[in-house]
Structure formats: structure tokens, C-alpha cells
Amino acid sequence: MTGRITLRRLRTWTVTSLAVLLTTAGVTAGASPTTVAATATVNGSTRHQPIDGFGISQHFGRAEIMRGSQGLPPERQREILDLLFSKNTGVGLSILRLGIDSGIQPTDPGGPNATPKYVWDRNDKGQVWLAQQAKAYGVTRFYADAWSAPGYMKTNGTDANGGTLCGLAGATCASGDWRKAYANYLVQYAKFYAQEGIRVTDLGFVNEPDYTATYDSMRLTPAQAAEFAKVFGPVARAGGYKVVCCDSFGWNQQKTYTSAIEADATARGYVDTHAGHTYASPVDGPLPTQKRTWMSEWSPNGTTWNEAWDDGSGYDGFTVASAVHDALTKGNTSGYIYWYGASVGATRGLIQMDGENYHVSKRLWALANYSRFIRPGATRIGATASDGDLRLSAFRNTDGSLTVVALNAATGATPVSFSLRNIGFGNGTATPYVTNGSQSMARQAAVPVTGGALQATVPARSLVTYTIKR
Image 1 (cartoon, helix red, strand yellow):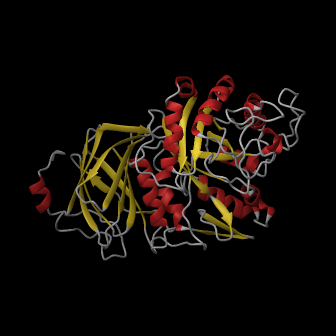
Image 2 (image 1 turned 60 degrees about the vertical axis):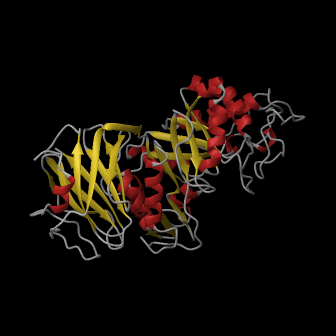
Image 3 (image 1 turned 90 degrees about the horizontal axis):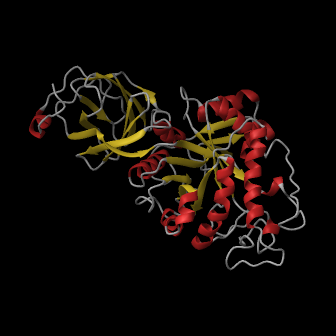
């Protein structure tokens, strides 16, 4: 059988002896649909963005809590680390975002040209320990990002409540021009991590420059961000670090920052990755650049801890799965970094730490269906479906395996005939992993791939990842 099958034939094809995914929506494992209701094409010759990976942050002391500062015992620490970083049983995260604050230079050394007075406690609120743990799981991408310059370098004199870096256009300060000193400060942070065996790969000089927070925050206009990129770029480049900008509060807002950098040839040359958040606006299309782009922080709004998969709350697992899909397919993002992996209280993190115990949200498994199987270095390839409720994406990993992720937004199970084209092999097996209300990335029986064709049923309101190999 070839991969080219007519639509008429697809509509009448009777499927026999094929395993169908278990679901609570009335499709039983091992059952065979009598007709194929939807068609899908995966085309290896259509290449989209490369994939850098998926990640989280544990900034603002969350790493220290995970380390046990609030009573979490070592065996629970290991279980949480496995859930977040294991490629066999957990999410398999490949990026850790570190938060830079003024702790490495808490006091004014006497001006921007004075010898810096750095302080290093080898802990960094638990982030050093966490980075070392992540590295042991195979993580090699560490993104260090600053929420603010130290207060004495800013127009408002404090780390919090906005303010702008002194020396930038429109930000004149009596203390002088702190731009170069701030650039050196950021690189020194990465050097401290190198002393602890962690190679910081990516450096960001601002977080949400369009939002004033009561905690660490700093305001930069798009023009000021482009200006500082030209100061910071040479310093970062000399240290071997990639520059990330600008982690705007919303995806549409980030487009303005990206446009300003792209319009300046020098700034454009120094910024390696454009990153935006999706609090103020969701991903609705790519950023205006040919460089790598990341969705670098988000968690859904919510007021209580939620472990549900699909309860309509807007901060359940299905919501997160939809957001990841949109970032990858609408935004062409190479990286997806969720906010907290594990936190406390009414968190929208993936895991809730609770004294000596912890609880797991379906949000974790929603991310895992993508991150465990789409590995750094993969390439997103063409994937289309005839059914608008079937949200499809496909990726070719560096080992030659194919990952196809299907998110079914329909209220009924959807039988699908997949045509796999230009993938380098026609026969093999597809192993499905399903997440829904009753299952969390549950491995199902392998389904044969014959002549470039794969038949399967995606359960209602479910997320299914197919790992396809020869």
C-alpha cells in the first residue's frame, strides 16, 4: 500500500486488527472503527522551525523550597525532579530558566566606573542546586534572565517598581552611565555559575520591560532595548553567551520590541533569540524575525490549585496543551518555557509542593506529551488534518524518529487515517501515549505503520503523542 490514498477510499476504508486508544468516551482499547472520519498528512519535506527545547523556572525561592526549606524530604525531592526532568518517566525538560537578581552585587561599588564588589553565596536561592540536578538529568540549556538591574543603577533607585537603566536615552542619572557596568554584571553572574559546573548558554537583560511590578522590575522602551543590545551584545559575545530579548509581558507587545531590534542592523546582529510571554496577549502568529523565538514564560490565570484535565476553568491541562500547540504551530517557536515547575499554595505551576508532600496537576502531563518526545535539535515538519477539531503537529528528531502530537478538541472520538510522506521509511510502528481525564501519558499498544499509512482513533478531548520508528 502506498502513502497516496484517494479521499474516496479513505472515507470507506474498513480498518481491521488495529489497536485503538483507550478512552472514557466510548472507544475501547482494541476496538476497530468501521469508517475513517478524518484524514491527516504528515510531510517531511515541509520544514518549519528547529526546536531548542522545553523548560521551566524556579525563580523567587521556589528552587530553595524544592531543596527542602519547607520540609520536603529528599525522597520527595527526587520524585519531583524525576517528574520534571526524567526523559523516561517525567516531562523530560531540556531548558532551565534562572532568575538574576541583585544578590551578586547588592551595594553600589561607588559608581559605574568603580571596581565592582561582587558577592557569591554558591546557592542563589537554591537555583545553583537545581541547575546541578537538572544537568545530571542531561539538561545543557541554561537561560539566565534579569528582572531588573540593581536599584542603584536605575532611575528610581530600587530593584522594584520599574525604573530605567541609567545611561540609556531618556534616562539620565546623577550617578552616571551604568550601561557597561550592567552588561559586565550580567556576564559575571554567568561566570559564577561556571564555577559551580553550570555553563549558562543564554543571557537576557530584561524581563517584561513593559510592565511595572511591585517586585523586581525594570522598564525599557523598544528603542532602549535595541540601544542596550548594542552595549551588551559585544560583552556577551566575548563570553560565548547567546543574547535573548526581551521577554515582553505579551506576545503582541513583544512584536514591537522585536521590530525595533530588527530595524537596527547592529542590535539585530547581537540578539540571537527573541522571547515573549503570553499574559497580556496569546501567540497569534510568529514574531517579525528570522531568528529563533521562544515563548519564555506563562502560566494560566487561576485562583485555586487545579489538578483537572478538562474542567473549563481555563487553567486545566487541556488549556495548557492548547497553548503549547499554538506556540509551536502559530508562533513557530523553537522554545517553550512554562513558569513554575513546582510551587506552593494556589499555584498554577505543574506541581504543588505541600510541606512534606506534593500534588501533580494535569498541566504537567499536558506539557510532557510534547516535551518528552520532541527533543532539542528536532525540526517541526508539515502536519495537516481535515478535521478542524484535530490540532496536529509533527516533528522529526535527530535520531530519525517521528513525533506526531494530536490534540482532539471534539466531544467525540475521532478516527483518523494518517498519511506519512517523505519521512524516509514506509513501514514501522507508532506507539501512542494518551493524556485525558483518566490517563496521564499512558502508553498504549503499538500500532503498525504500513506503506506510509497509520490508522488510529484519537479519543474525545484528549492529547495523544505518537512516537513513530522504523
